[in-house]
Length: 391
Image (cartoon, rainbow, N blue to C red; front, side):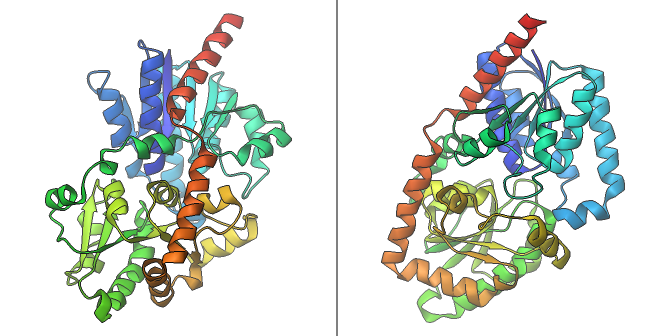
């Protein structure tokens, strides 16, 4: 079979790479072309010479509603290139991974051009822009969801879906970082043997520029407290970024460090984490590090979001439990003072930590067992084969 996959950000690259491994295992003769990143490229090279990567997502990553509006020509050019790639290669199926602003347009195009369309990791239509449900019904042949709370939602909406668990369980549990002793981690990364706080600012340039000033101000305040004078603050650098993206806020602060390619290790060995909303928050819960989630965007993005988002929480872990397992400091509440207060509580209040970890255990149970990526790949191939028999 010929598979064309599209992922537009770091989390999609991660899930796309694991899905590709599952597809190669189920379909040894598989041929793939993809828009994605380094993880998907690595998964391809494990099975094929050369590369199937046609476009690196880092070339066009933008943040929020306003950024898309401010870059319409770039967005249109990327859409056109992607459509041309699909038409030229003529795959058996187009697999869209999250990234709804772009992928919904590709779904409509691919469906109209006669290609089978799968959507892996459902757009968050249960949170906002519910009218997109009709687009899922119209342009997507099969939806593959990854959260248990989506089951009743899409059942009620009449969307044809498959649920096989959440692939993050595999990604976290299969990581070498969870088996590496702290001493080995420190020796390999060059970090001093001091207590640490993990800082995760997101993967997009706009997110980093928005989050890092508050992260740096928080770290400065906490470092100034006598009880925390020897603590270190470790930024988990996004795979799509470089040291230059963080230098303005870390230079001159010897207690702040940036590590790339070490996100799970940084989380695991930190006493607490401050996490930009997104996949990283759920990863932090699965790893077991107490956290506070933070988000701040442009005023325009925030106002638009307030108008269209209809869920109580922005963090996946809180959404899974339908209650606040950990705090969310959003927009005006995301201040150095508020972050400092919450992080100190995470460290000092053992009962508070224990309750959060109990919530983490509930989240893990709700997400199901391991093997989701392989099971999704098997379900995709089964559906493709049955469809071709019908033809």
